[in-house]
Image (cartoon, rainbow, N blue to C red; front, top):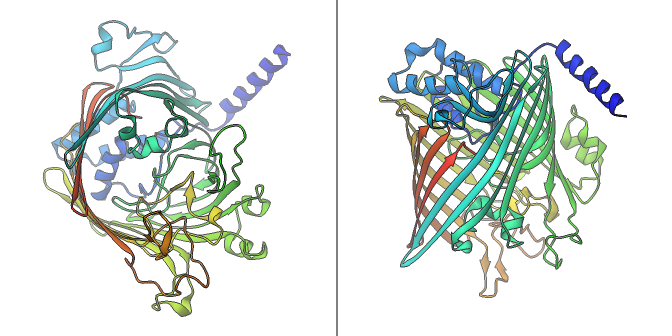
Length: 550
């Protein structure tokens, strides 16, 4: 049995070696600050056929983008050149020194020596040749969070450890695995639960235990074709602060993707596995006897990528309470018509993303999500005309500074559905924007790229939200379409809606975020957020010392 298994493995590896080589097939996680640098340079117009609307990118795509930037180095200032140098070393475009704990044929410099405090890239294990690579890196952080609201102060200290394994086999099969586990070292756990990411963790938020996160994927690449299966944080949608379609607002989603990519065109089919929380009548939300109905989303995305930007159209459909539907796993079909043929049970929608660089130094980003619409009732405040849109403009200023302004608007009842299982949520959270229906936001962003790994980013914004009117016991009195989990009730709720009707909630916020790499791999990062909700001010300061970004 062992001999047969070894024989099959040898045949498989031999098959990979005979395929065309597309080294560095695995993805670069969205937490890597290289994306902030690429977005900064993207504005300058020196990355033709490039867009950051769909993330993460493959390591080879990031390398190609950095090489393209180097070709246009005359368009960069000294700060940008300094940042470029750092990322070229990290992604091995320039010569890189590695140190490891366990030796390989390609690396035998011991990290448990003076190399530990050097600028070497540090690994538990690292191997690389012309077609294969494997990297095993430790992850770790200690994070302090301090908050103050009016005269009440809160604080918590979090510790986190983990591991990241990634690489490529045969130049065509990329793999990635990241797993972390953390605990509250000291302080107020309830304050930690105000963090969006920790809210997503069932083990921490509901089982009163530690918190753990894992992401992984496998990607096969052959010429123009690729296939991906995995669970990872994804971004989809064009904007400055907004991703109306898919963001990190909800837990990462398991998905299977098939796609075709060329220089100026890409098509991707993705079938997501979502989590539909048990309804309020279920006494169990987790555990061996919890019954969670199946919930899925199918997405078709067509993207044209001319030199000046990107135009992408996505159609998607959410269905639940039944097994995987063969009609929706066909990668080449029209989902809306399929929904009709299957008796109109599901929630279909469309999304348009646009990125335009009309001249160097200016970039316009926006998207339009059409959840449902009746054309004869446009302009009549009909509740079923559910849309969301955002538009923003970024400009590159002197001294390596970018400025951007953006407006986003979510109409009442957007993201809802007659069948609550089919709303646009995953595990009880919107998987797109952080804005609820019946909301809008004006935002301003300044990004100062001063030549290191982490830029200084300043964001401020003003949000308006019309919440559903509730009594003191939480019972719904008036439904204005402000809750993604509360759909329109025929015969009870009015057919006409007024934007921002209901209980008004106005929020102003300003956030400062930056970091500093002490030596390669070891980082200090800080975030300071001030928020004012209806006259109640809150301040939150986060300081993290970490090894690697995760």
